[in-house]
Structure formats: structure tokens, C-alpha cells
Length: 318
Image (tube, rainbow, N blue to C red):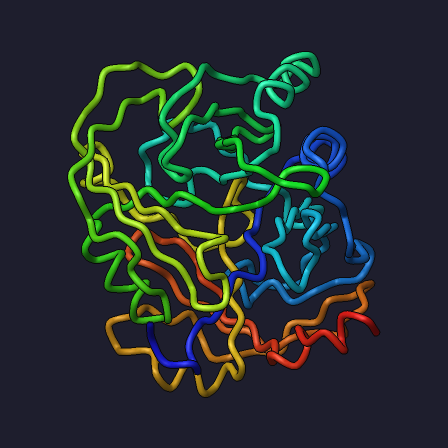
């Protein structure tokens, strides 16, 4: 594992959505996540920190599973008002970027039945690429793939347990991840992957892909990042810079101090500006110091200065 000054745990994964109501209707009403914190869409924020330029107006909800914000990763759903959301008409599951999430549930069959009854697209059973176990894939309102797997739990609702990144080059992506604080849990290995493991309704015919796994120290193995390098991804362009693109766009990672963390990032890592203060209007947190990095696939990783003392039991009771 890397230095304690680098990334330590996942805080949230960003989902840019067309409708916050529709997103909460699936992830909260159907899957049991809870909106614990919302930003005020009437208050402008500085879009330049995410490559947007000028003022932005958006509604943001942080959706947590039953573990809450100090023990689990949130899904940060953002509905852009100005500038407008950049719609994503591309349904190719092999293009670079964060391509799916993993949610584990106590009763997979019951969850699948409930989602189908609600009109959600759900595929048949597959070997999950993130979970490594029997899973089904569903599509959210923005076309994001959700891998659903069964795991014992005495808590209500789904548990947010991982993401999958489609990589142009598995080795280059792995070097980036370990440079910012990740540990390699599974080295790249050739695995037979079918299209129906990437998105519901895909072909069952497999092709060889390089698959690897990574985790951060404070997440233990309750949240993992799976990298899949598909032959069709090899010659694709990285995800463009600009934070209002529909779908899963960036990951926020806890660091103790942004300047200390950035001082350890090697020159090989693409840095998107200096650390900046990011206000969070309408929430209990005034704001946070953040800095942005881009993987070789264009995935944005955000260092967020959130000292460990904020996650102590005493703070949790307060």
C-alpha cells in the first residue's frame, strides 16, 4: 500500500443524471439508499474546477447505504441546470470510463423481481465482473450499468461495494492507481468476458480481456475497483475533460491533506490544476479542499481533504 498521505478510502462516486427524482426513485425507493445530504441548486458554484468554465447551477444528492457516510461510499448524483447535462447517446459498454457499479443485496431474486415490476431493464444471471459471483445487470435511467450480487446482510437495502472501469491499457491504468494510493488486489490476468457481463442484453460469446482489481487501505475489501481492458477499448479515446457528462464520471477519495498528497504524485500522473476550495452550498459542510487527477482512460479521481478525525466514533455520535 502507498503512503498514508495518498488516497485512503472512497468517499463518493459521481453520477451525472438527467433527473435527480428518477435517480432517487431507483437507488433510494427501489434499492434502499438514502439521500443524506443535498446541495442548493439556486446557489452558483465555480465550474472552472471541473473544466466547465464560469458559474454552474446544479442539484446534488449524496445517496448512502445503511452504513452511512463514515463507513461506506456514497453515490453523488448531480442534476445539472446550467450548463445543461451533456447527454450520452453511446451505449457501447467497452468504451473507456467508469462503466458500472456493484450493489450487493441480501435477496437477489426478490430484488430482481421488484426492479422488473417497476419497469427497470434487468438481464439474466451472469458471472459478475466486480463481485466475482452470480450477478444480474440492470440499467438505471441514465443507462448506467448496475451489477447486483447477493451477499449476507442484516441491514436494510443494498450496499454500494465497487465500480468497474473500462481501461485502454490495463498496465497503464494500474500504474496510475498505485501511484495515487491504491493497492493491487489482483494483477492483470487474461479472463474470458462476454458482452452480457458488461451490459444486460449483450452476447454470451466471450473474448479475452485483461482483468485486475484494486482497493484502498481504509476500505479494506468492502469497496473495490475492477479494471477491465477489452480488445475493443484498446484504440479508443480517453473520456474528455468536463464534469457535466452524463453517467458515471469521477471518484472522490479521502486524503488527510491535499497539498501533502499532491506532493507525492509522480509527474507521470495528469494533474488538472492546483488544489482548490470547493464550497458545498446548502449542506452541513461549508466546503472542502480538492484536487483533480485524470487516469490514462480520462477517469477523474478527486483528492478530497477530509481528515480522519471526521470519521471517529465521537464525531459519528455528535
